[in-house]
Length: 426
Image 1: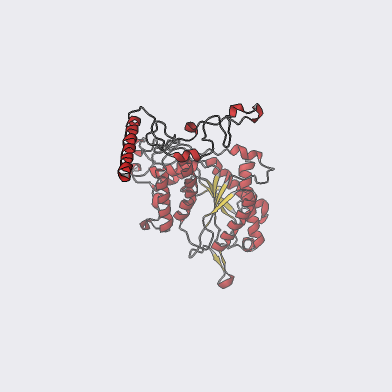
Image 2: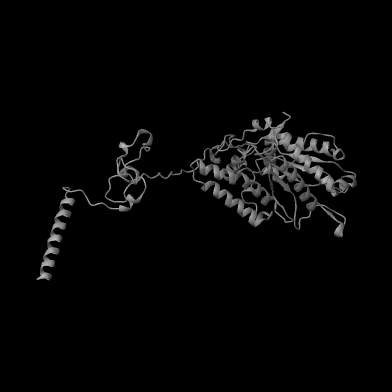
């Protein structure tokens, strides 16, 4: 009998539970509570009570009133899938393609006796605006060049020794002297607060085009970050960086090697124009190439500096296309800071003369000279090439071979950069 009575009681309870669940389902009774853990969270007690209170908070003196607390339904959203309110989620920002404009050479007017010309406007958004005026107020600052980046390119390296004087262990090699000068310039520029990038830091050979690609990647890395922050897809910049990586990896100058990449053409291809338009935005990055002179005439001496203006670059490219149809080549690029390049070349020469008077140019000119140098032609930074002396000249060689002489040359480079940004001559 006891067992039958228990079974009846269980059956009755099951029937009652089913009726209550049915009434809850149709809305007659409230739904059962899910996610009971929420009531273990501080601040989710019923309105008007503090944890441990035995009386409503409203009955406390005014100076003991707790700060207003959100109700449990406001402070902690249930995980119940049937809840009418869900936690708000930050909507993902959908990035868009980087806009590229006016970059079709077929839409440009044809050249008659010269290559076509790209418009001077940027083909990509301007995402970096270097305020060079700000530097003019920093002459007395502890680090006046903070924010400036200087790319130093010491020519040669590895099996490419450059000029050599002497033989055996006592031989003076251009590649070694140039790396030492670049290192001394790096020290001096760092004291001014500048960021310095060396295209080579060891006795390793890099092709001419690899060094151009290494320099280009400095601006590409920064523009990629700016592109991402501005809400654009970075695929265009990523592709350019991959192309630079290929040039560096192949590390060959010969046309057949593929190591010239984008740079192995006459004129400026659409992709190369995008790169130049990116570099154009970074006027706080400059490039300085270093090399030495050497001549069978040992009397030749003194320093030289070289640069390439927009007109000179265009004239050089037009010269390469003489006798051929200009339409077969890419357009000339003209958005080049010619005045900045000329100023940097002049300042390098004058500051070196101040530091080491005996390295004064033999032609007596303070201004730089224009010369076709691929490293300068294939970059759109403000750039110049410094030749601090002749390894073949006894007087110049004595300075180049001494630690103090190389330190003085390095300091002269830093002084020129300081003057370019802080106290421009124009």
